[in-house]
Amino acid sequence: MAVKTLPTTAAPAASRAPRFRLPRPARRLLLTLHVGIGVGWIGLEAGVLTLLLTALNTGDTELARAAMLAVGAVADPLLVPTAVLTFATGVVLSLGTQWGLVRYYWVAVKLVLSTALLFGSSLAINPRIQRVAAEVAAAGPEVMPVSDAVLVSMAGATVVPGLLVIAATALSVYKPWGRTPLGRR
Image (cartoon, rainbow, N blue to C red; front, side):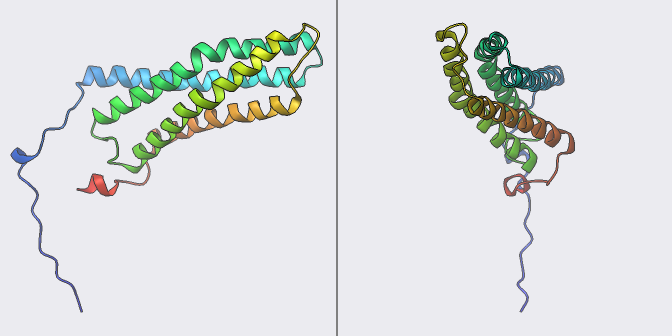
């Protein structure tokens, strides 16, 4: 038995609430900032990973200590602000363009990734980096108080955000999956 559906009519344009759209110059500026900050984040993660791998693979305690202190010095002022700025510019761009915040799956997935990266960077990764850097600073100059296992886990924790930012970039380029149910309304 076939179910008949009644045709639906769209609401007249006058009754729809107007959507906020960023003017073209503002959209381009925000997009440039968003992409630039994202690229900077990838570079930041690559730099931190390089320093961690240097600390892990050198036999020179002084170099290992210097690398760990540099990780703490670089991550503290840059990691969380980079995550916040990437998240904020992405949200403003999505709200001010035709893509919307949850109208398309790729934007919704980027929102989830950005949220996870923001909280992961703020609440897990940077505090851990700062604790380890403080341990290194407090130890004597001939002692590397951080085990190889800790350095390996920190390197892994650095690789994941870098890959997630690259994945978010790929989503922006390919725009897969189409509209969400909210976007079809």
